[in-house]
Image (cartoon, rainbow, N blue to C red; front, side):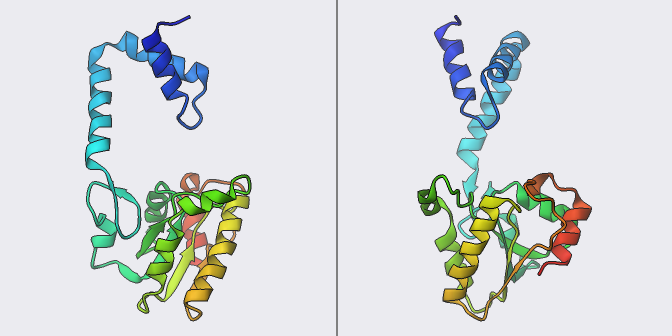
Length: 197
């Protein structure tokens, strides 16, 4: 129905989370109607993203710098590591003002439908960090849904094997089950962090 160029872009956009056929079409025709300036700005932003953003070699967050600003900050408490599933959870935690430690990004959770995906998670990298005797606490701050719970139980077992004296905590309840951490309001998230168990 559309030209090959339009169909190819629609197909690429449909690979994005939550983007279906109609949303992809709206994006494409918005760009076609808006002119070359907006498309050029988008292309430059994507180019900068691929050329400048890299993985932090310590926490696996995405940043323009390696190590990232949080890992490089000497004022942070490097003895406490907060484990999150995805990078968008970090700004949510930072907005609370309650946490002064560092982070570790797993880059996903254990999915029951695809147990082999565990090999893609940054679990071994977390265990290496947890073996450092200076680390006294690991906070498991994953979403309170089935994949999050499964991942936290797995991490608790693995971390206890390598450092039995390590304090492993979770965020206190108060976060609604099935919710996304990054969309939780600061008060609820701050309270959950402060009263972790």
